[in-house]
Structure formats: structure tokens, C-alpha cells
Length: 545
Image (tube, rainbow, N blue to C red; front, side, top):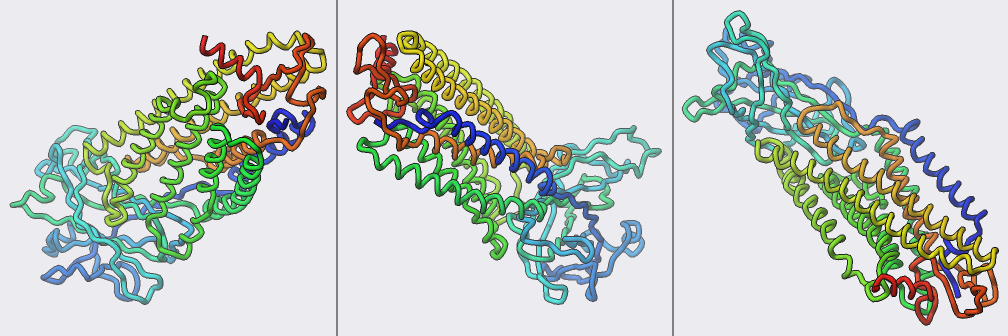
């Protein structure tokens, strides 16, 4: 009867396969470390103060401080006061990108953070819980001569979080508050060459709009976008890895269907893992270069969430199938206590993503981080997600320990065998334990990557750019996932080798005690047409007892 490749392949060939996979893993890290630039770039923008001379403020008019139709500008608010220009007639203009540069679809996304430069004045201090009301409009164009086309327009509020580090006295008037950077805008595609932001700070004393927010001197923006060079490397990796995983997936399932018995649960889960890996690999991002698909960020998060769910569920079932007794094994329903929380957590991730990036499809200025409640919920979500990921890894370590203990208890059958067969099965046990240790390593790296990526994205929104993931870490973890899934489908595919009952190199062995029907199987893949092997039955009996 046929066994899995991990059982039947010679040690020499397995070593060669392992070395090749290890070289590809090292290559994936080197691609990010030596070829790809940093994943993101940060650009600082200083808004230019334009004067709206029209008595009726037209929202369709765009104020641009560059080019032939540039607006009338002022240097500071003292000049505005001297010229009797009201605050409602001042428009802050920001051209993206600065100078004569151009934006590119390779940048993938654009995130903007708002920084207000507020001077301290004794008669105009920042009140507790002050809200800054911002009337902002976004436009785009693809050449320097065409008219600006409106992309979004919104009236937003941002709570100021400022502190004054010196004594509040007339002596210190003019010093600036230390204010936190505020979330401002996120766009899921960068399909146009030029963008223009017109920002107004409308003042209405009767309605308490922009009253008690201090004396704003300047508006600065911090722009974050994905590096074009990193995007090209990332797309190239996806394009290269997709055919490999797809081919091994088809090959694996073809071998499963050629067997006379129906596939068992573990084989189905491995196939589902391969499908999820293929789904996340397919480089649909290439279409974002030619199409203005602002939903690509959300779609990428959904694909990532599906893969996380499948990978975490696979590890639970992979270990559990080596622990369950015969009455419970090969039934997905027995894992609902372990898989259920994974599915629930994935649904929470999806809801959290829809609450922000889903809304940003229609209003790019919306941010869940803009309010105190939203910020607390987002921070709590990141913390809880990190804790749950760590608890999952500890639980997985416990399951692997139980698997090792379960397999070690079967070693008592080995002394009754001949020396050749005993060495053969000790080698099989070593192979399986090594694979479990590799699984633990992949799980640890996945948990670390998940936590750091969540914290890194949170740092963008609460205004810190100190924590950034290295390109090598991105490409290395992505390569590790692909190589691990490839190895699992290859090693657990049915082998083409067949052995007779009297051959010592096969999966079936005959003990020296004369029990010619005794068979030992070291994996849970049932390869006998008529049912499980003797040790498989023995494992179920011990579990029931």
C-alpha cells in the first residue's frame, strides 16, 4: 500500500528538498534586504496660505499656489490682520507631490497626517477638549494644464491633543504648543499624477466653530506612501510564486483523488490551505497600475484575513489529528472549540477594517482614530489581538508537546522489531518531529509578523513614524508562508511507491513476534484501503481509555 511522501522518500532526497527550500527562504530575505527599498516613504508638506477674494466662497474654485493661475498668497497671519483679511477668507493649499515631481500608481496608497502649529497666547488659549473643524476638498489632474477635478469634499472634526511645556505667561507668548499629529486622509490608490488639497478653518463664534483652538500659525501634512521600488519587487514575488503553488496544489489533489478511498480531514484541510495561499498569491494588484481601484487596500486585507484564518486553523487540526482517538478523528465538528475563536477573531478583524477602510471608499477623510472612543477601541483591538495571538502560540506549543509525548509512547513497540526496521521507524519519527518544529517556527514568525504589522499601522495613525517594518521582513515572511505550504502539500501527498508485505523499506512492517498483520503508521494519513493500521487503532483505544 502507498504511504505519504514524508514516510517513503529516501533521506538523501528529503535533505536535498530541504536544502533547496532553505535556499529559497534565504533568497526571499535577500530580495527584500538587498534589492527592495524601504516599504514606505515619508514626505512633509507645508500648506501655503491663499486668499479667497470672492465675497461668496465658491467650493468649485481651486486655490493653487503654483503655475500660471496661482492664487494670491500671504506669508503669515499678521499680514492678514494688517490687510483686514478674515480667517474665513484664508485657504490652505497643499500640492501633492511637492515641486515638479509626479505621483505614481506604483505608490499604491497615500496616507496623510495633520500637524497644526499653534502659538500660545494668553487671551487665546486652547480649551480642554477643543475640536478643530476642517473644511477640506481633494482634487486631482494628470497634467499641468488641465482643470482640477474634485475627488472628495468633507467637513471633518479633529480633537486637539496639545500641551504647553512651559509656564503660561505673557513672557512665553508666541511659543508653540506640543500637539499630537492627527489622522487626516487615506486613499487606497494613487492613479493620478497630481493632487491638490484646499483646507479651510471656518470660524463661527455663535456656533462655537473653531473657537478656543488657539492661534493657528501654520498647517503641516505628513504624507506616507508605499515605495514604487518595493511595489515592483512585491508584485514580482507574487507573480513568480503563484504558478509554483498552483501547480503543486493541482498535483497534490490529483494524487489524492487517484486513491481508492475518500480523502480524510487532514488532506482536505491541506488542500484548503493551498487554495488560500493561491488566493493571496494571485497578483491582482497589477490591475491597480492601470485602474483607479480604491478598494484594493480593503480587498488585500480580506485576502490576508482569509489566509490567517486558514493557516491558524490548519495548525490546530494538524496537531489535533495526531491526538484524537479513532471515534473523534477525521471529523471537523470536534474542533469547533479551537477553530471557532479563530473564525470569530477573523470576523472582528473584518468588521474593524470595514469600519474604517470601508467608509473611506466614499470619504477618504474619515478615520476611526479621529474620536476618543474610536481611538480607544482601535488601541484596545490591537492590544487584544496581540494577546490572543500570543495565547494561540502558547496553546499550539502545548499541542505539539502532547503530540511528541503521544508519539514517544509508541516507541515501546520499536525494540521488538529487527534492527533495520527499528532504525527505519526511528528515522520516520525524527522526520515528523522535525516537521513539527518547523511548524512551530513558522507559527512564531507569523505571530510576530501579525503583531508588529498591527502596531506599525497603528503608529501611522497616532502620528509616529519610528516603527517601520523592514523590506526583508516582509519578503522573508511571505516567502516562508509559500515554502511552508509547498512543503506540506509535497510531503503529505500520497507516494507512488508500493511495498509488499515482506518488504522492509515500506510503511508496513512485520514484528519479530510473528504477528504478520501488524502495521504501524506514524502519520494520520490513512493509506490502507480497508481502514486504519494497527497502531492507528491502538492510539484510539488508548485515548478512549
